[in-house]
Structures are given as C-alpha cells and as structure tokens.
Image (cartoon, rainbow, N blue to C red; front, top):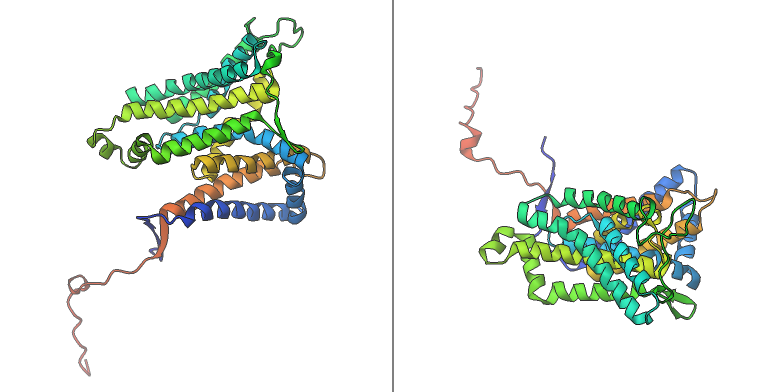
Length: 379
C-alpha cells in the first residue's frame, strides 16, 4: 500500500526556515530530553532551570560558558567551512591537535618576547599546524579521489598518537625534562599566557574574540567574494562547475586548508587561553572536534550562527561540569547534545524537502481495460 505522504524537493528555501529549523531542533531536543527525565523519575523543569542557572544566569557562570565555547567555536567553523562545499571533514580533532603542537612550540620558544608578538606567533603557528594536517586529506581527495571521511578520521588517530609520542615516549622539545614519574608537557613562557579581557565580572577569553572575528571573515568570504560563489556552485553541481571552467581541484585544497587552519587556531587558543602546556591526554579527552560537528549542524553551517551555537553547547557543557553530583544525571548533557544533533539532522530534511499529500494518478481508459458488459435481467 502506497503512503499518502511524499517528500518533494524545495526549489527555493524560505528565509524563515534558517531560524525556524535550529529553534525547532533545540525545542524538540528539550522535549525528548524531558521525556527521558520523566521516565527516570526526575522533574524536567527543575533540571532545565538548574542548567540555565549554571550556564548563563550569572556573570561567573557566563565566563565558564565562554571558556567551554571557545574551542567548540573553532572546530564548529572548521566543520562548517568544509561542509558548505560538500567536503565531509571530520578531522577537526586531529587538526586542533596539530595547531596545539605548533602553537605550544611557539609559546615555549618566544615566551619571553612582547605579549602581542607571542600572541600573533602562536595564532600563526596554530593555523599552520591545523592546515598541514588538513592538507594531507585535501590533497588526497583532490588529486587521487580518496574519501575524505576516511582520511580525516584516520588522521585524528595518527596525530593523537604523535601527540602521545611527544609527551610520553620521547625526550622531545615539548616534554618537561624535570618531570619524574609521570611525564608532562613543558609550560609555555609567561608572555604566552593569554590574559582574558574582563567586562564587568565576565572574563572573555582572547581566543573567543578571535573566533568571533574568524566567523565574520568566513561569512564575508562565503557571501560576497568570487571564492564563495565558486564554492557554492561546486557544492551544488560539480559537473556544472567544471564545465564553467572552475578549478575544482584547487578549491578543494583551499577549502580544506582554511578548514584546518580554523581548527588549528582552536589548538592555539587551548594552549594560550587555558592549559598553557601541551596536554596530550586533556586534549584527547575533551572531544572538541566531534562536538564541533554538532555545533556546525545545528547552526546550518552558518559561520556566525556557529559561534552562537557554540555558546549554547558550551553552556550545556559548563552546566554539566558545575552540576556533577549524585542528584544530577551524569549523562544528561551528552544525551542532550546527541538529541540536538539528531533533531538538527531531521530538521535539515524539512529544509530541503516539503511534505506533500500524494494525489493518486487518474486511471486512463486504456489502463482500465474494456468496459464490463451489463448483466441482463434473468441471466
């Protein structure tokens, strides 16, 4: 039996859907989360109120939220930039590691120089580190047709192993030589400590400001330049782009380089803003790269929206840390993030397609066959 409903592709996407889908996805995730809480015998309103209070309601909690949001903004931008061209870069994790490695090297080597010189050097080194990792997958995709999902995923593990090697299995430049028993990274110089900018009682990490600026630059690049136009054409129809003379190979490499550089800036911020050391285990346990994909999906790959969604997810993460205890569900924050991703992907279907009631096709006379002869009385 045929379904009475069918999906019909939208020829034009209404602008209001750009706001309605993320808002609806978030609302749907909260409703599903409330159902889970009710099943487990907890009050959803009370739980959500506690999350809101610990995430945004006070200036001190807002500072913690911005700290959690900063690396997610960079990895979210990393995913959004690549996904907009149809390149599935899920290697933000490894690219952030690459940025942290080179940024910490710059912070150690230049730690006694003027603060602004060290800041710029760490950002540049972080961008180069992330770009280098991303270009490996980019060149393999552009030149040899390798699947970037597999290559970027495998590079995450390779860079993570290299990160462990630098700290735990070698006497590298990054390892603290005086660490006995348990090896640890060498702390960057005093000028490499990025002091936050304080507004009132809220401390704003410098990396978060860089993320906002990066979101503005990427938004302008994709909306107003020839580069952004060609990326949109290639994403929509690669065959048309090649027919029009667009250099798709170069664009793939360029987009992957930009994507990796953004994740690398996140690695520089992790070292300069927060850890002040190349922390191999801490970086791997944080899972910034994979959460960044959730951020980009909920923002519908909008660069500025990605930064805003990073603040939302950072607030959830910060509240989860603050509320850890026997009276708070330990897996609630992770479950909410998963539900948000699930509902965002489901909402994307409604953006691309509209639901229509299937109208049965009229039956032609030929298809219906010859008419049935009338039955005579008494037959």
